[in-house]
Length: 417
Image 1 (cartoon, rainbow, N blue to C red):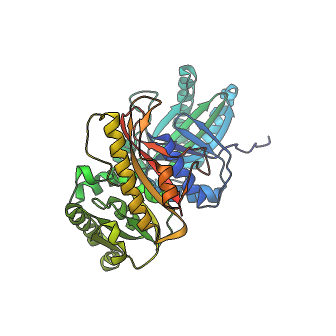
Image 2: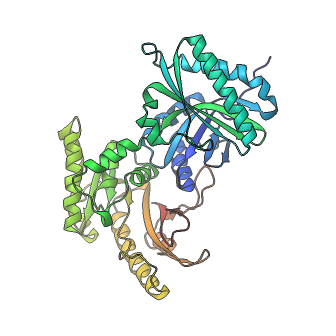
Image 3: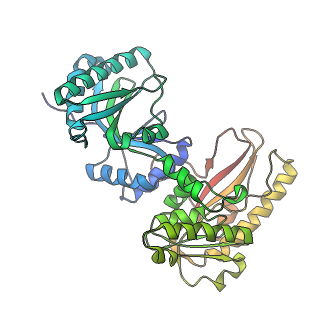
């Protein structure tokens, strides 16, 4: 029998904000010089056709991603009508896969199943088939298998459960996607680790609710900047230093400024704490600088070119409810002038062809009408090119951050010098 090649060999589980996840994934794949890609989007999943080399690079690169949930390999692709022929193929796949896992000493393994399909009948058939294959494989390999099923058939193992139950050390999560007339089956090879982020957040010496960017968002923003290792990341509204810290973790140099003494103290405390935890303490301490400064005086401290500017700036007064449209317009005009002034000063030090990642506020009054700073006018005044679409996955920019129904939200804007 001739073995047909897979149409897709990689799957990626997108985060709550699918557009942001696709934008970040596009940025990662661009680093591999991929400008065209065969893909299919289904629910929260992207199916990709990648070379083995690019698949391995992607799995490794996802360790530094902020908005992507899971990724793995697709090993089987069958038509739904061939269900009866699927069991021996699943058994052969499980045998080959389990033999590569480090279970030689314990002879024990945990297996979780994630079956995504719109038809309950097919889900039950596939669930039964995979379980029988697992038991047969366990018997053949003389291993003890514990099948962990999520509470609901339609759900899957969360990243928190994945690491809490040690699936990353002695387990495997099988993923089966039934899309129209085809079944795609494989296993997870990478999962985002929320426990690391929780630990990092709890260990930070200073946390300021109104002046901090979330760890995952900061990581995503740094990835979107595409700053090369060793280059300088600049944040002119550094707040508590989260963006700068994520840059340091990716071997970047970091410079931050802020007009608020409270923020400068917080950033210094957080980055110093990170430096002291690092194996090469002195080397890391030499990689960052924080200044109490207005952007107008940037020339006093900036003596080098920067590889990228990444910031979540001052977004206006803290509010719980929408202001009047007149007041909102006044706020946005004020912020537009502020962002323009800061970027005009900063762009003098930005390398040509490099990026500015900026978050701006948005007040949504109806589905069709919202008020936000004029990011196009900012681009013109600062002599910057506004990015309107991602290279891959057809993501339109700016991308909204947060839940779509939020009346007070944020947009992510990308400029290039």
